[in-house]
Image (cartoon, rainbow, N blue to C red; front, side, top):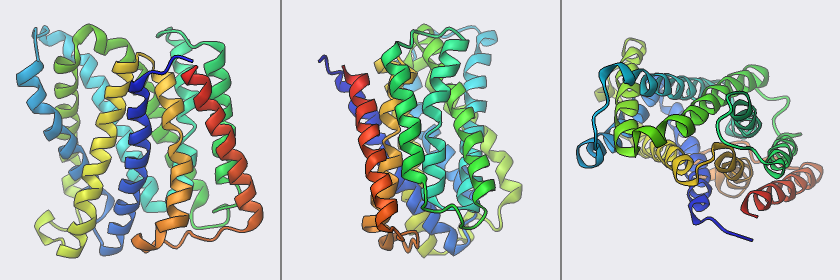
Length: 294
């Protein structure tokens, strides 16, 4: 077995995402709103990457070439917007597993656009991950609030992020990290200004209790997104990264069950049957990740 240490990055991002999503979900109780949260998250990731432009930018590309980071920014922006809309509608334990379909979507888009190779064992891993996500999700929130709409929004988010990941794998090696990511995230941050007219109130009007949740939550989601796109470049395969990253479906179930009460989350309602299904899903997910690591 040949282990690529870079695959530890999407594993860490999976955990960061779930904690960030729980914090953002908690912030909604204070009337923060999805648009202010989306704005803060996208501005945070832009601030993280813009300094990289000055230090590692290297050769400047012709202005006409910047349509590529602009397209990547649009897909990233769309994925973020759909994620926060889903968080407004429903529960984290619904959103995270449905967004796990990103695994199979990335493999599909990679094949259709002929970006890199998707070995048979990775296809098997992608299918196992998708089935595992279904088992992790089954029986938990099927009759809760706005489940169908929440799942649809999460699927739209997964599609947007998946296509963006494949384009990153295709374009970033030509541009270089320092030249592609800063303009991409800067454009996404500027696009987020479109959210401002929909703010319930100015950012300064948010109570201190809300900032305790939304500020670290937005920062964690920004770090998660930055880490995933960096992992795609380091590993060289959006499919492999997303198979490992799909473990966030398991993390979402475990964290909601173990520490959900820290975030005033009311999803901790697991019966024995549901727990057995989710343990089976966890086993399939581990098998999927092993297929990538081999």
